[in-house]
Length: 77
View 1 (tube, helix red, strand yellow):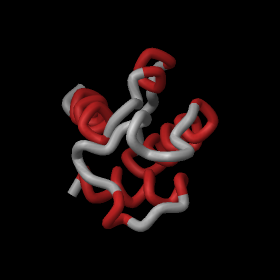
View 2 (cartoon, one colour):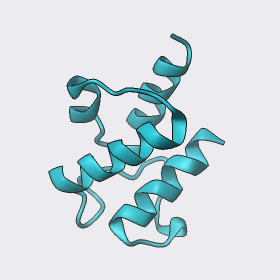
View 3 (spheres, rainbow, N blue to C red):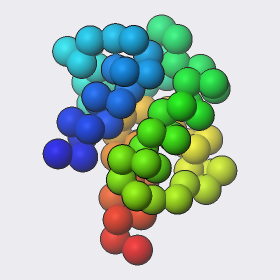
């Protein structure tokens, strides 16, 4: 469920189809995933999951897998 929401958010921000986003997707293999998009993604993640991300968390938002790990870390705190 977390992963699906992450993929949905990334697809929306990057204007991609959800089918184009996978667990292996990252800021190197997806067009338009830059620092500005990272801010939009992180804001949407905070709102969707009700968490507060640190600047370090946001700077590590470089892949679907890493975002998932960060969300799980916050959900267990």
